[in-house]
Amino acid sequence: RGVRQVGQGFADEVFRVFAAKHPGTRIRVVNADASVAAMIRHVGGVVA
Image (tube, rainbow, N blue to C red; front, side):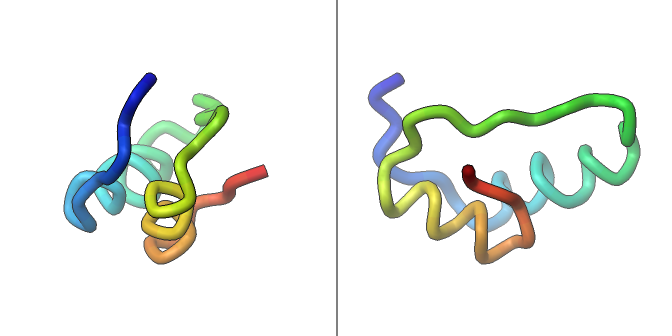
């Protein structure tokens, strides 16, 4: 809540590395700011 930006390294670690190591864990992005959503997409994450 209230997050306006995330770094590329953090987004990559969560949405690519962590997701690959934990395939049974679902990561949901809810109400992401446009810049946060763009970074998540940049590292291969999905923003609904």
